[in-house]
Amino acid sequence: MSREFTIIGAGVAGLCVATELVSRGAKVALHDTQGLPGPASCSWWAGGMLAPFCEGEAAPEAVVRLGRAAAGWWQGHGVPVTHNGTLVIALGRDRQELDRFARRTKDHSRLDAPAIAALEPDLGERFSTALFYAGEAHLAPREALSVLAARLAQNGVAINTDAAPPSASHIDCRGLAARDSLRDLRGVKGEMLILRCPQIDLKRPVRLLHPRIPIYLVPRGDGVYMLGATQIESNDRNRATVRSVLELLSAAYALHPAFGEAEILEVGVDARPAFPDNVPRVIRQGGVVHANGLFRHGFLLAPALAGMVADHVLNGARPELFHEYHP
Amino acid sequence: MARFYGTDLPTALMLGTSLYPSPAVMAEAFRRSGASVATVSIRREAASGTAGEDFWSLIRQLGVRVLPNTAGCHSAREAITTAQMARELFETDWIKLEVIGHTDTLQPDPFALVEAAKVLVADGFKVFPYTTEDLIVAEKLLDAGCEVLMPWGAPIGSGLGLTNIHGLKTLRAQFPEVPMVIDAGLGLPSHAAMAMEMGFDAVLLNTAVAKAGDPAAMAEAFAKALQAGKLARAADPMEPRNMASPSTPLIGKAFLS
Image (cartoon, rainbow over all chains, first blue to last red):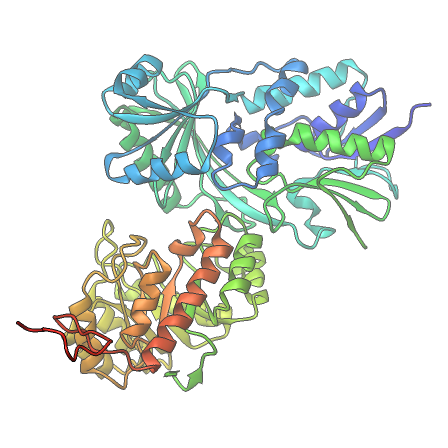
């Protein structure tokens, strides 16, 4: 017997849940009034770093542990993943930040200038020490979302843009829009830029530590980079502020002055859905199952969260991140 | 303990609300610190108005008095506007007045500080000015109507502790009746204990707790250090002396030979 599940929301959470359920033989209907993944979805603006060890600097142990399976999951579902690791650096006067970061994270090695140059020739002469997380990976979020949507379509699951039929039991993956029913869900505003800088050739995500304005650059290929990201307690998803863009661009310029010549292709803004502990949850509330609160870990944790949703709805399991809310 | 604008605070800790790994960790740090005041930056932490409302309600749920600040303001005008927004948002006339003079060191601009303090006091605010240990600036701030001073320990976020002990002692001695909070630059609980031993009335900190590996544990460590420092101050510590002073009698032994 195969049950049919209605999933609302086709961002990274909804697409991963749909993919996971279909791969376990369930029937799925997917609804999103916005249709195919696009700029209205928070995950459109994501960095796409699959960097569980680096995230462990500020995130709880579960994020590191659950995030380790992400790269394999994405690859298993046809999404190209680049396994080039992560490079973490700091400017001279913030050197202590690197020591702190090293103390609080695992699975890294310390590089000197020649080793940095061997990995990233553009950075070797600018930085004398770095941390390298060889086991980390990255993907291109928009490509990943499109691949999942296309594969679901091949399996007969199209994204229905009509409002979902009224139903007491569905899987709610609407992200921040689910604030109407999840009282402790909040938005954490993120601002990012997409730059084209052909003079610079980075092969892996680079994180620049700074006590106030940590940034990262994720290569998208062809000299295109995603530069992120601010983290501001706000539900605003509309506009980037001058201060945020200035801070991001200044940090990129400090990383390498060639970014001064980069073209600004896009300025992106959205608000990440987050619970108070910034850890995602599978929530049963009445007949509805929510998968939400992925915070800044959409591509890192959506696969694990999708697995938990499937365990719950197919087998009645109460997985690790399971919560019960009373309507 | 000193009264801050007529208010008794149950503990000597004012704790900031930025830079925590999550709001849940922040709430736990507040619980274990017993902090009696939460400082919030309405410019830097969250959007003003409804967009930041969720975070403001988390702050209100901490159940402690809120001291909004004007962090990130670089002119008297900006600080005044921010203070007015803060009063509306948190329904309090308390304001930690911070006017930054230098982006890199975050050193306060004493001239703009005094200017903004005058305007805000006249507008009915109870101003907590973030200042240096400079005596003349302190005097001008008191003249402007401030009834509390918040001298720095060291530059914001530096964690260096009390870098000018002599200057801070002089300030304390010069204005014995003025409630004073050591604000900024503390890195370790021992720094907080020292501030209390020197007779300061409270400390304000953020980074030392929020950026610790275990913020809640560090918050509790600060709470204990503050208690120790306060108890020691009240116990009237011995005066330091330049030579050993044996605690056992020396009769019959050769000494000072």
